[in-house]
Length: 115
View 1 (spheres, rainbow, N blue to C red):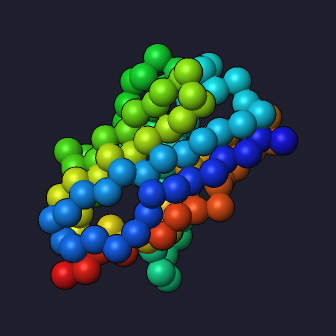
View 2: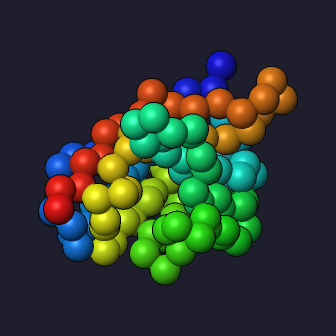
């Protein structure tokens, strides 16, 4: 069973930066499209960034030009560099991918941006 484990969340002031990491196991990571999603209090979970096996990236409008998704295939690791953070970025952030049984999510890591 695929396992996704996130780390790197925390509390940061508005305008600051954080880098999230995700370690994937039991997956052919190099050939898999990966993504980051988030869920803010009272809102639906959404995917905000994806990266293909060829490292093509796509971003939600709300994070474009502020967040950067990247991958390190040799370590089965996925990253999300978050810059110019805003209070509205406060959410639980999840590593995600789609398997033959559907979309799966990690356990999440909390990001809190204070104003």
